Length: 509
View 1 (cartoon, rainbow, N blue to C red):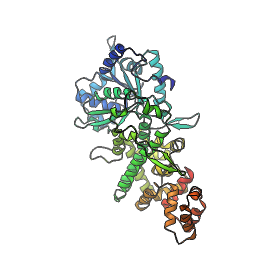
View 2: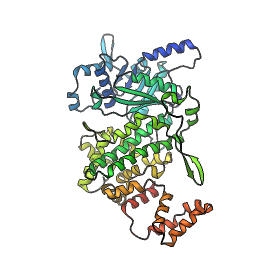
View 3: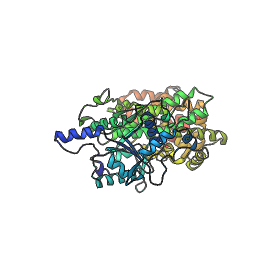
View 4: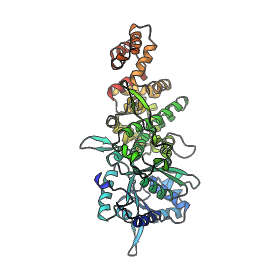
C-alpha cells in the first residue's frame, strides 16, 4: 500500500513547463470528492449547499448499502431545508443513459482531483487499498488521496497498533474543529487543516478544499502523521473531558487544570511521535519552498532536555501551528453554549453518570459501550473508545513518556484495569482533591518526584543522603535509577490514592 502511494501528488514527474501549467489550471477548477459519507462529510456538503446555489466542485459517494443521510438522527433530518438536502443528493449522484445513479468510489476518482476517504478506522485501510487499485486501473495516478480517520489502526495478525499516516507517510490528512449541528448553521464559520508531507501538495489541496464554502477556511500543513495522532489522542482525551465536566460540575476548580493538562499532553505526545518519524529530514530539508511560506512562523520549534546527563533535542512543536487541529482539541473538550458536545465528550458524560450511580468503574469496555448505546450513542462512532483499546501498544511503539500521558493512562486503568486497579482509579477520578493532586504530580518525570519527596523528608537519613549524593555529578545517573531509597520512603505509611494510581501506571505502562 505504501508503494502505491509513493506518487500521491497532483503532478507527474515531468520537467516540461507547459503540461505543468495546464495541470495547475485543471486544479483551479478541480473537484473534491468524499467517499463513505458519514456525519461530517454530509454536514460539510450541507454547509456548501447553504452558501452556494450549485456546488459542482464537491462530489459525494456513500458506502455501498448505506443511505447518504443514514448517520443523522431523525430530529436533525427534520430541521434540514429540503432544497439543501436535494442539493446534497445531487452531489452524490450523476446521470448516465438517462438514469440518475449513485456515485461510487470509481466515479470520484474519475471526476475529482482530490478524494478524501472519510470512513472511520474500521474501514479506512480497506478503502485506501481499493482506491489505490482503482486509481491505477483508471489511469488516474495524479488524484491525491487523503483520510480523516481519528483513531489508531491495528494489524490483528502482527498484533500491532500504529498511526496509519506513519505506515503510509504520503497519505494526506484532513481535519479541523467542527460540530455537526453547527456546520448546518449558515452564520457560523470553521477552520480546518489539510496536511501532506510535501508542502506544494498541501498548499494546492488546501486551496481546493478552501473554495468549497466561504464559511470553511482550510490552511495547509505538512505534519500529516502528527495531525492524525493529535486527532486520535484528542478523541480519547475528550472522553475524559466529558467525564470531568459531568462528574465535577459542582467542583469547577479542578476543570481548568484537567482541561489544560489534557490539551498539553496531546501536543507533547505528538511531539514524541514527530521525533520518531522516518522522513523527518525530508520534511524540513527537501521542500519545494520554505515552510514559512505555508504560514509556519519558523521551520522548527524544538527544546532540549537533559537525558542521562546529555543534552538531547526531544521536541518538535512546529505542528502546534496547525491552528485548526489545536482548536479541534480545545473545542472537543468544551461544553458548547448551544447544541450537543462531540460524541466522545458525550461518552465521557455517560461514564460519569454511571460511575456516580453504580459507585464503580465499568466492568469492561463492552459494558461502557453498552451504557453509551443505551444513551443513544452508537459505539461505531465513538473513535475515542476504539483508540483507547490500542493505547498501551501505541504508548510502547512511540515510546510516549508516562508523565506525558498520565491522563490517558488513568482513563485506561478505569476501563481495562483489574478490580483493585479500578478501585484506585475510581478514587482518583471521583474525588476532586485526589484528581487535582494527580494532575499536579503525575506530570513530573519519575526521578524528579523522588527528589521532591526527599526534600519533604529531610529528617530521614535516607532522604538527606539522596539529596547530598545528587550533588555529586558522577553519582547522579546511578541514583536516578536506584529505586531502593524511594521504596523505603513509600513504605512509611499508606500512600494516597493518586500516588497509588501513579505507581500502578509506572509499573504497568
